[in-house]
Amino acid sequence: MYLKYYLKKAGDLDNKIDIREEEKMYTFSSKFQKIILGGDFYYFNLGSRDNIFFRENPKDQLKTLIKKYGTKDFIENVEGYYWGVKIDYKSKSLEIFGDKLKRVNLNYFYNEDIFVISDNLKEVRQEMGAVEYDENALASAFLFYLPAGSSLFKGLYRLRYNEIIKITRDKVQIERYKDKKEDTKIAEYSKKDLDRCKDFFKKAILSRASKKLNVVFASGGWDSSTVLAILTKHLGPEKVISVTESMILSDGRCLNIYEVDKARRIAKTLGIKCEVVPIDYRSDKLRDVIKYDLFSSGLFTCAPFNWNKPINFIIEKYGEDVVVFSGDGADSLQNFGFSQYDIVLHENYDFKAYIDKMKNYLFGPTFFKKIKNNTFLNDAVYKIFLCLNKGKEYVKPKNIEDRIYYYLVSFILSDIRVPFRKFSGKGYIREGAFRNYDKWLRENYFQEAVDNIDETNLYYYFVYLYAHFHLQSPQLRTFRERFKNMRFPYVDLNLFKFMAKMPENFGRGLEFLPTKYPEKELIKNTLTKEQCNIIDPMPHSYIYEEEEMNVFDEYVLKGSVFQSLKENIDVSKIKKLFNDKYFNVKAIEAVAKSFKQGKLKNISEVETKLLLILALA
Image (cartoon, rainbow, N blue to C red; front, side, top):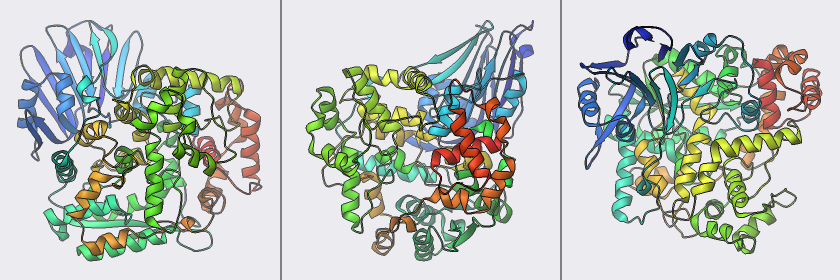
């Protein structure tokens, strides 16, 4: 998508707008308006009917929908990976929008003369001339990752959740609308709602499927196995292929040996082919990844070089038009990542699963009431996790507003996900600057939740914050930037809305239902007992579930990535990139010099991101 609007150019709207023609683009014109839609469209909701699939050519269906719905209702009822432009000749106005979750990365910039928006960040940067780095966004990029709406450059933005850009009589406005109150309240769910959710899961997968060939990134876990089983059942085994990666460490062992074994066995029970792509950290290079301009995208993570080889394998063997599925995002919306986020490893699967649920409880309505009335320190479950994390620092808020804010921050940004765990600059952001960063986060991303959250809408605001942070993850963006037909069925409009209202007793509290409860019920009718027995046992995926291991040491210090990074890091440029008033430049230089000299014995995730920033800048 690319659009340029000349704000000071004379003439009618068509003369002031340049928009690039694309393959999947649909134009609808009338006397008073023109609507242009682009991207992939999966299904739509019409009246009481949910999940009506779009046909291969959706133009006629889209035409019906744009007549029925205004912009906001279209966004609320049409699921897909899309963007839209509405030109109104009568009011001399323009609206630009994306799908509700803003999965198309719409980057924009404007000044007195022009407005430019594109899904290619480089195209927007070229219009900007000289740029300055945004210190807060840069800090976010290496401490966590870029949240929705922000970019590494001052004056360059990204369209975010519930935003629409309006240009009226040459004035640019960003409108942020609120969801309907009834869509934010936790509901009482019954078996009927469970069946409805199971149907959402199934249709989220099938509405994205190809009639020709579907490749699924498989981990041997619940999410990817469910996708494989549903596709195989409805399309046939000849139209489904499983692909998994085998990560070879410096000592020749496979990091994800259990994952590979489970993926192979699941594929065999389904009667489908399983391709295993080896990623040997001793020989696979980072050079191929650097050319994708990961710096401007903010993808400072190991995800790009983990997935670069499997992505290339699929393109070379099956072509760029193949549809590729990933189960990423499943944990995010169903149980907010508690089955994968700082898990407590134990050989007993049921014990480990219930520990996940206990942590999930700490971010639910029952515990939140104790946050509000300041009795949370007496909670028995909270005390257990404080004991498990002895020696960690915790924030001590002074008032109810701060208490809610730091509770939310520990949910979204904390490394161990325990309420009030202190979030810091890891020694690389100066203390005063970190206070500015904290203020930036609060004002731009958390304040709406702080002002409005209570025990009746808590899950809505968790989902809302997830849309701004976790759903911006580098792995999701890496996949989509490489595959135009990448599919994430668990990051789905109807599932998103369902999860925002799903109550605590649906697998999110201390009751004995499993985490990811609705999906687990779907699994009972989708996977056989034999297949479930393959997935269930511990360890689940990695050898570090049985032994202590720092995977970043393996990625960065012991493999060929070290040499590639070493060649690309220029220590002399650190001061140009990092403002010494904001960042601890000496500490950053020390890490970079030690790394280049081969003196670093171990490395953290934050330091890995710092090195990637320096190598890709």
